[in-house]
Length: 153
Image 1 (cartoon, rainbow, N blue to C red):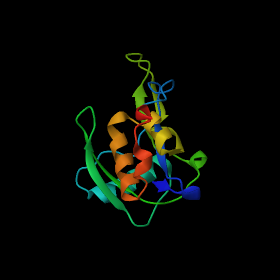
Image 2: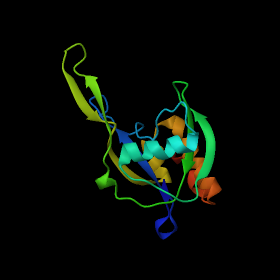
Image 3: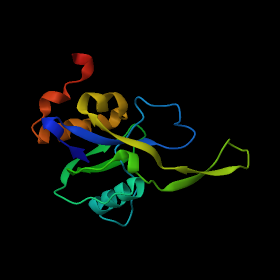
């Protein structure tokens, strides 16, 4: 999801929930995403956004080039312009035994928070393998000047 307040591109990113990510911030955020099998990829993307944020979106979806993550997972992504208040997200939950081998099972939100980020801010926060999706979106929207890597500045 993206928005363009005052002519400046911002993207919605989600921070993974659970004990492994509590203290991890920079380089760990992601686009809302999930797995699918017998479903059209765009339908799965819309479902996952709803499951992870509690918000349904509609509009003109821009298909982005599938992106392979570091672990080999292929991410199919679409972008849609929209607006939501990230403080109002309601994520689905998963159950995890934590601490490991403790026999204690707890529920954790799939994402614990979300936020709007400018392209340079997104580059700092997002999983490095997903930043090309942000760059492609910026280029498709005519904001390619924002995609220059911060390290190149």
